Amino acid sequence: MAFIGLSYESDALFGYEAFISPLLFGGAASLPLLVKYSKRELTVKQAIFRNIMHLVLLEVLILALLFTAELITNFSIAISLAFTIFIIDMTVYLVLWINDSRTAHAFNEALLEMQNQEIHKQNNQVDR
Image (cartoon, rainbow, N blue to C red; front, side):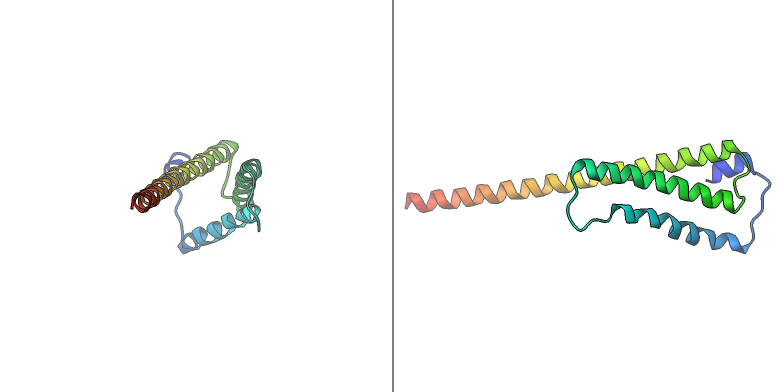
């Protein structure tokens, strides 16, 4: 945001109300997360669809709020912000996927070790 702001509005100054905007935008950006709520486990297609729907709603909501507050003055800023939101969202999904993959790998290794120990224990009991 700082680089976009410096390139398009380098002479802009902010008042104390600028400290409130991260809370407002953070709260507003949390609303599209309701799309992901489900009482049951989703299929892969449903999860992908809801992730895409979340991104679209997030883009529309943030850009609409910025247009309403007249913080976006031209189309190129809107495109830059939309692209930035997209990149951040994809980065978050990538980090979450890497973390989930590591967790799944650790669980699988622990389960395999537990199974091997159980098989070894059963073999020792049969040999006696």
